[in-house]
Length: 445
Image 1 (cartoon, helix red, strand yellow):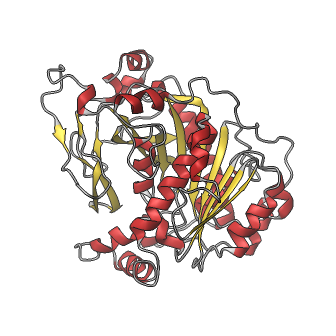
Image 2: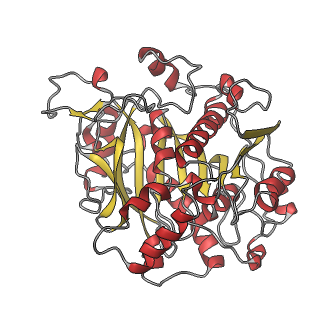
Image 3: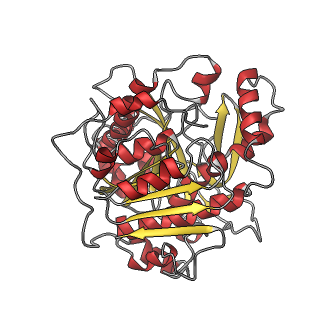
């Protein structure tokens, strides 16, 4: 939930022989969303804080890194799904439509989607199945690991069978025709892969495939069990985890491979995961640079331990999102300093949210409602209660408002940098009329 990084983490950084590739140019295949948005009656200028034109599907898969035997990465996948209007009512193998309840007045879209096996849901996926994906390939599905079943709302576990049912994503929904850009998400220390599910859903609804692994040794479950990996080793493993997820999802044997644009990949992270995302393009000790990462986003990112010379080596476009009341990744020492010292990152954007605290950008205020659940480990119950108490009440910004800012800035930045949608800059310009009250934006090109 939070990241408390020791100063010795400065030992993690060192010069490397290579640097990350510059951001992609051109817009070939960059905006498959545009046609779909038009078909759905959504204009290109639609607010990125609002749900996008796609319904949202959800799956859980396991990815392993052959270079680190035994390190299995349970990974949540969110992806654009076909809406009811895009699926024939009599489609074979789809006996019924799953309708999510409408939420009038909340900014959520009413969605109707149909559950089907992901590996057989698109013609393009047939070849992947023939090459080994039918048996799981490099990303076998985890069945029964989460409470949600195909056709039901996605289930986001806190621990075991204790968790939250989504009001947006549907497990096993029929994917929309791709390919789409890929976003890999790194959670915070003692967090989880569903820590920022609201943002993952928003990205998927705007046409991104999102993959969020649990980092073994640094999850809520690990914390509750009293086991934790040393932070320096964990920082290196986290970087390798993101690369392993990219590897697994882009292997031909992975059933979701046809949904992914392997040349349009962003790393997004929260807290300790924000550090992970920001360093992913340049590497960390034994974790090599991953030149496939073209954009990085740090949300309440704990970047204070990174020396100026290290930050100056990062060349990919970077977004930093932070709150003015964050006592963990304090504004001046983290996002403020990183924005100044990311001198080779072009463009870079800083979004500062008045009265937001560290965990305002997580699901902690919803998870607080799970404290009465039976069998919740006492140490985890206490951690959730204390974190929620420090996050979810006045004078701090209400979580839904913080989430809306995160949705707007992250979607707009990725649309701009991964898809070449210049119109999205209007949501990131400091003097723009579309900047909500309480949000300070800075842009350096």
